[in-house]
Image (cartoon, rainbow, N blue to C red; front, top):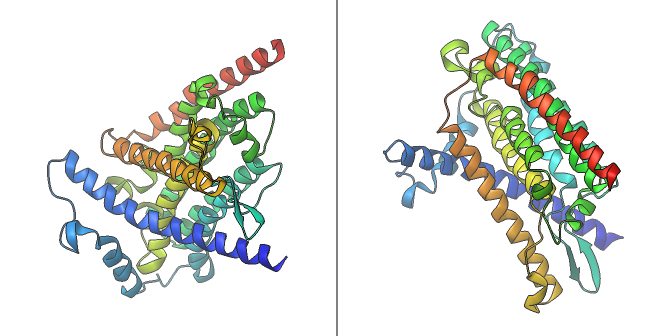
Length: 338
């Protein structure tokens, strides 16, 4: 029992540090990628090729002067970014990061918490993210922040419906709410082959849920100054910015798990390697998929222009939601006939 507890604490700590590290360096990759697309240099002063730029940004946020509006609700003002950051990190608990690893004769799964309702847990946690943004925007007592929070909450709630129906199609096909069982069923064929439309809808909704361009209307500088975090500074602002990149990382992990076989590698069983090495290779393969999705998130941001807000809501309610519903009905008919 003690060994199992120590292992779980070590796994949680590793995932937490990895999430923060990937979020830090995703900012550097994004700025380098933006520089490449716009034919200019990205950050190149802090360390070789600018690799210490995220560290400098983090130190700057830690030591920057704290600011709080006199008319703000102080408790909720602090609660908003903390809740947003906590929700971003909690989602990773049920993702299977690999198979089973053997240590001193004991087998340990590379999953913090496994249950038969993993997907419901993700829905429950993700739906709480809107509270952190709404609380932060309202507690700032700033009309631009409040308008940004209202935009973000309506956008997230609208696109959660289409995302939920896209995942429901996968659930209907696999017959399970467990992410581990979903991964195990993709050893021979990935779900994206059977559910390409569900994957496309999920990816578009993931862009909207993480407030990434072209769905970054809640932070539209030309209209809202800075959106729901206009009145935030120092590490409170850092929590909001970091949570966006952590959400990108977790969304990429969920897409890789639901649609692209998770940690399964083609023909890996034929290599004749030890079980532990196979597990580590599978985890590395999962992270390759995650990094490719992160690059796709960044590519879309620096390629497509921002929607108008009426276009954004029309896409969610009149295009993605009906398509997801039709896809769910077709999947149900096919499963019934089978």
